[in-house]
Amino acid sequence: MKTTTKKLLIICIFALALLAVCGLVAGLLLRKSGAASSNTIAFYRVPQNVQNAIINVLNADSENQNQEKAFEVLILNEDLTLEAQKKKIKKCDAVIFINDIQTAEFFESPVTKPINLALANIADGYPSSILSSLKISGAGGSGAADGAENSAQSVKILPFLYDFYELDVNYPLYKKSGMKSLNVWDDLAETAYRELPYTKAPVILPVADDREFLNFMGLIAEALSGSKAYENMLENFNFEAALEKGKPLSLAVNEIRGFLQYGLMPYDSIKFIPEDILFYMDHELSGIYFTKLSQHRKISNKVVNNYTSIYCPSKVFTADRKFAAEQYSISLIKNSAETTRLVKNLSDSLQTELATKTGLSPVQKNCAVPDHQADDVRFWLAASKGPVMPLANFFRTQEERHSAANKLRELIQ
Image (cartoon, rainbow, N blue to C red; front, side, top):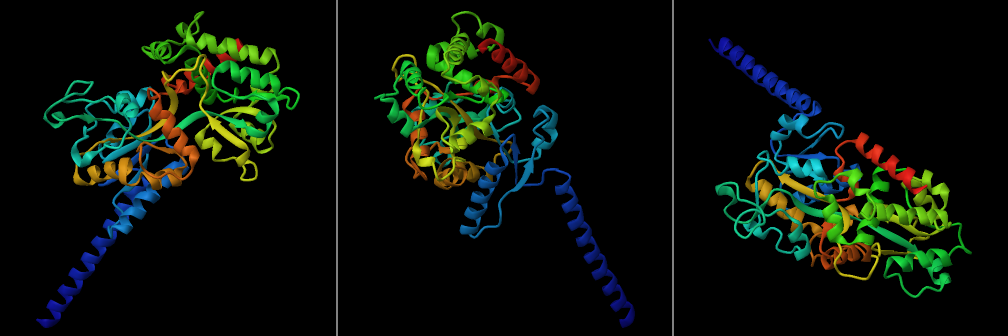
């Protein structure tokens, strides 16, 4: 009898062990297949270095709080639409992404849960320019409330980092030009003209990169026409209509064509991608570079102190500006204590760490920042009328962007 009982006990233990091993293997296979588990953050079209930085900051915070790693990671296929991955997304807790026309529509839909701004004082430290750019629902909000969950002010898309489109100025070359200011667009053109004796490339921008070229042409269009005219162009955006005479994008085309014709921008730069711009910056071959904050971070330490970052100057000096910036945002698929804490951490308590690790600009107006570049971007966004989605993000497909960029390349030559 004892022998039989012992055998049964051994069989039960073996069966339980086998079941545990099978469960572990199944879990590993599930994660490998890309299926979302509980407590999962999904990333969509977020650069790998930014993904890593965000997760590392969150994990480090969990360890400091003596908690286990709170979230698993799911990388959504950037070549597929969000709608095509809807079933997978619904199994996640939250999605982190860069704003474009597709994400704006998808994450404002019933797929996502509202983020209650009053809960945990989320967004309390945001400057008014950032808050005014949000689509706020509920009492006092700009949108319509969508149920009991939205009885207080809430948003479905909450920004927490920005990558700013800017100009980097080689300061030693600028000093040689004898210019005293770079406050308006004509100052930029005159600076470029005065730098011709010292460089064959006073101004350069990455014309060969579809996305970046479109974004810089949009940046210039806003600078020349003003934020109101530019936003009117973007409302129900139509590319061909935007190129009509006198429209913002047409003004930008005319200006860059003139830069090429008068030698202020070399025709060689039509073949330039961002990596070429970085080469020119590292070797100080040009005077004024159209670039962005994340690209500025890649400049060689040997020469980085020779560069001053500024926002793109407007046609006439005015505070009525809206600046193009890539907006890193979060939307919630599930409402829980964990996701509320996640949103609070990203938008408030971990802002300093996130800005330091990513090199991007925080949204919090009073948090510490790693350097004056991030602080400048934060100030420019706060002092302006707020951020605006970069032009390339208004095209839905890579094919549309390529076609539009090709059209602009033809027009500037």
